[in-house]
Length: 432
Image (cartoon, rainbow, N blue to C red; front, side, top):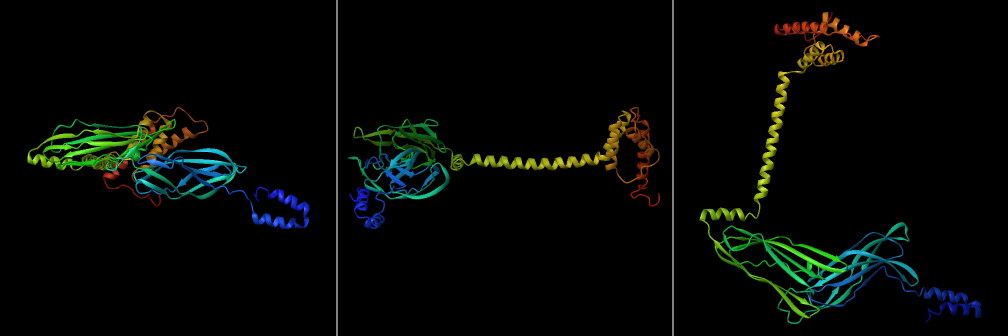
């Protein structure tokens, strides 16, 4: 009442007792703002009671005076016997609180409990960021999601069942890679079990049974779970592939598996059973049986061994190919050295009277020629003549390469003769 009429009291007090206005202001400071402080984080739980294994939705509301930035981060604490998961994407809305406009970011969660009685969900941290209005720098906020409680009730006459889910629609189907029946030791079978349920997460569905008789081994595969929300309807799926290996002869029977659920609408326990499966396992000859069991018991390692072997073989072949290619390149270089290749190109260009190609081949031969024999005599004259034709004031297109070809042949003949007689001049003359 004092907070609601404070403005009226202050105005009346100021008119009647001006000298007491200061005291009123001091009283105002002592009383402070009578508006309730708006929390940054709030929780909303539509139902505080549920059945064992039933989906219990709850919503965490993050509040800010401006737009949200980035993704909120929750540090969920898992409770023994319970599963808490986050569902979908947050929903953004706005709301007037105490005369102020607030942005609300609502996050949906779901709790599934196999424990009955009163369950307390402790507070857990949340971090998010927002701006003041729509512009400016983002401000990081650290908050706490308030603790809350839910009452879980176990359906009547279900204590002996153990794992139980609550849903109005449930189905389970199975398939085999090949039909069970007459078999041999070492044979393997793959069984796919798929469960679907409404208003449940795939994570909350029962795992496949791992019970097998003596003489069989089981290799379960990690479950594949999926949750779908279509037009507000929530559906969970769980798919598992289980491999059974027959290791001993005789009649082996996989027991029947019964899935039980509580229908909250009809208030009845429902069930569906996957029938028992029988294998009539024949023994193999002793040596063959040992080999087959050893191969199968590797649990699918042979494809990796095969791939590794092929990889090593390919690497070895590639390395040998590189060595052979390098050796072939060196052999071709020895049989057909660069100076010989360019000499042939020069002679061919001279015969074709191709001035450009002749000059290119000439400089290429000079750069790789063997030894340092001086270019003189007729060859020097022929080369100078070629350059005059190419770089003269008025280049003459009537150049003929026969003169250069003959001079080049003569030079090569002299060089070969000196090499044969051991007279190749490696160093140029000091006083030519």
